[in-house]
Length: 350
Image 1: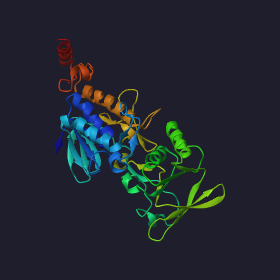
Image 2: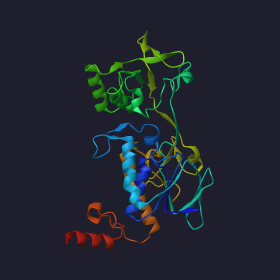
Image 3: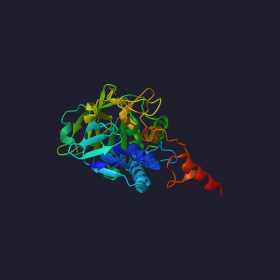
Image 4: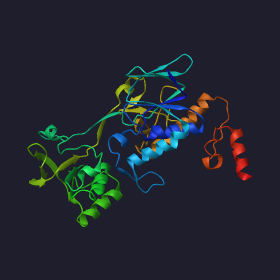
């Protein structure tokens, strides 16, 4: 049986950053993830996708962010159980938990942090005849490697951040990039909408709104699509269609853990520490819900930080905690106690 202080279910960016915050408090972590490698959606679905809202990075690739997070936590030597699904959480008489995976691997811990992102997810697919015929033969739901589109004609369908971001990025890669959306208004960030409009004016991007894809064409693989715009149809030659209509999330086994579920997410106490209705079990990142919730990576980082502070106090009742900046204490000397923090301050002054 694997024993640790904190079991983190989900090795996406929020789960990885939880290890760092726990490490500062000398709490050891072990992560469980259904994927064969850390990184969550960032690694599995769009490792090359640019991310624009990480503080200190005007832009950072999703895969690069994961690599940096892993490097950041390497010093704390976390454990990993990968390619396995956490199926049950059983509380013991002594207040600890045993988390068991679908392969029977058991983990004993003092607290559980669920950082499972959207859980299990499937792309939302357009209702088009013969769609399955063209999947992986010209129809792609994720951009895992932008280089496969270099010099090709591509059509992106969608109106959210992913559709906008990839249209901007791939306009510099593909021979011809077309963005189709069924409305004139987009749901994405305003600066991305402005950038798309700018690329259209520069002739680097074809923008077709309001319009929808109605037919797919090609023998063995996709060679073109039919779109309908304001009652008229038009044939567009293309090598790839990339429908980016979002993901349909499913919590999977998490739904059976006795947690309060709302809108397919885990209800938490955001006024304090992001704890669930089960004491000692926390939920951070995209898998949780509370009033005003924003599904942003940086919000997940904030939630993880407060959750770990709560876990430290729960495991060390009566032990006074004084928060000090890591610029004062460093990493090795940060253990959350007043005595060590004061030593670090004196040392820095000397």
